Length: 426
Image 1 (cartoon, rainbow, N blue to C red):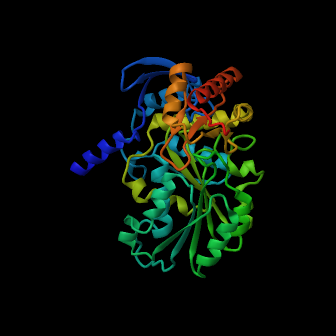
Image 2 (image 1 turned 90 degrees about the horizontal axis):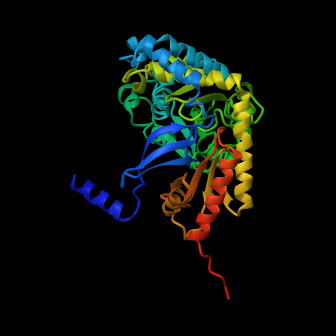
Image 3 (image 1 turned 180 degrees about the vertical axis):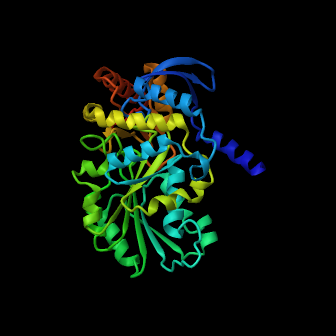
């Protein structure tokens, strides 16, 4: 443990530790927080929540979670493949399948487990079956800016339990340039072999850059590789993009069938922590045989199933989204308004979604910026200071008013003016 002690001490001395705030009460975007270091409490206006449609406090969603507890209790106390599957799971899977236009859906506790389950299942077929042997290697191509849950799953794709037990062929992993279909094409031409099983993995909306994967171009590249698999992580796309919030396919005015017709197998990962007022994840496919394989993957069979209240909250949230497309329209309207206001104020706001990263001058420490805007203006935004281009990560949602967003921009401008003194050349 000595190494850990020395490392953490140096970490703190270097100013890399995050500021910690404890939430005590939430009502919409107003949050009562406590500074963990000082114990001071205050109510702030939040622009750092992922509750993109404001459904966390929706009465129907809360009541659904309460009703589920009354019917099932707080936990299923088993994995789904043994005795932990309940009727709500079946209903939620059906609701997601209808929402994403893919008929077969499997639930997981979170995105990290879903991604690892998919890699174990796809690359290694999860469990050994007498008389069956897979002899084909797997080639995985990943966008260099994909989310950590994707990176963790793919770097372990060749070494996890599926390979240990199944003795399956090796997995090769190659990265392609961010949102660059031409580089994806070059990497496929360079690395794909005749008998490879090919999977391309990408965020739909990138969580630190707020931009959108070029889905149609990716499909066009992959159509030359019959049976290749395209996995889109829609964590920040569901409820946020597309006319009714169905995600990246709707954003580009196509359906998953567009990929299928071109010989590409579409997979979609949906998560519930952003648009669905809950926690958990799901993977959807048009291939019926994938679902039972995912169900017995190590991260499914070896852990508890999604709890009743979380399942019910996600189920009711998705129903709310389907019944009230105006929620999505309001989110997208707010996104356009806030992005416009920030650009008018001279900020470099990158991307195009409700995830709005604002790149700061290199002289400004994002942690100091966040502290100042909270202290002086009562606004809570997320500083990102440990990557190549430090930024403020702002998220707008359907509950923000124009007054809220104007207040944010006013505070951003004043804080910038306080902290940034540009050098004027003689």
